[in-house]
Length: 343
Image (cartoon, rainbow, N blue to C red; front, side):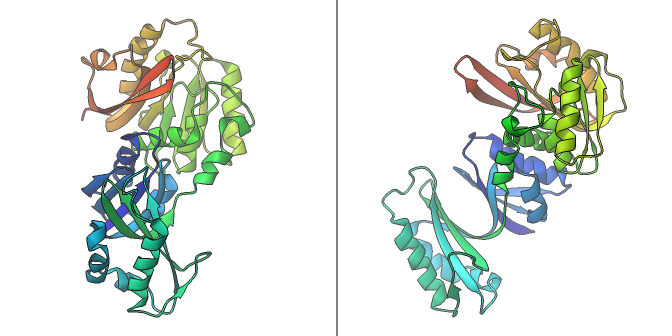
């Protein structure tokens, strides 16, 4: 197994690293966590980094890990690592130092980048190309440590910006941002070429992210105009294989699916079809549990006053994780990850 370092986004303290682990599992690979720092996760895995970078929503890039140390030991550590074995000779390099938040603020990042480059150039005659290098060496400063990697693949973060809700063919105000929607899809361990269900699909924001990683998205909503909005938005993104059902989620009866991720309607701009919020979850959770294949995952959001821990006590579901997220000043939600018990 190779040692990979993930440079995570700072959008949440826990979700980005959990998304990495879930994506690796969704690709049917094992992993071993080696080190976790603020916005940095290093693991050992045989998962394909290129495939992972096309899945992840809360990550900047994935690199080959070489060393983690203090600044005073950095040059020696680089010299004793196998970094040069991974750099083809007679090709160009660039060295970039990135500081997470305000860690190691006393370090001049430009001078440190030059120092690292000099140490490498002492042994091999590379060309330095800061614009379009063949090899990009990254040194990330976090929690008092320097993490050195060779970047293997970058996440197309700009693509998430281009899929912002306001840029879609059909717009609705209570739609989740695409990078978070993608994280939910991954937390549900959605497999490529599998089936994915969003029982409160709205205009299809989560369905789009599931479809783009290669699953077949299945959307359900009680409102016909939202179903039509989903259809337009999915087609706009080139997703051809999907199912849409205009029905109440609690009446759902389809074939069992490989993953479920959903953001039920609880905000000011959303509609619950006349149901009280607590009753909405209480009546729907058993149905969703029944729709999952054995040992598959459900990722579902709920405002903090809705305690899904209690609602799920008598269901064949095991809570794997709970993440708290502040949406705005009057709404904080929990993001739950459940696993269906084996049957």
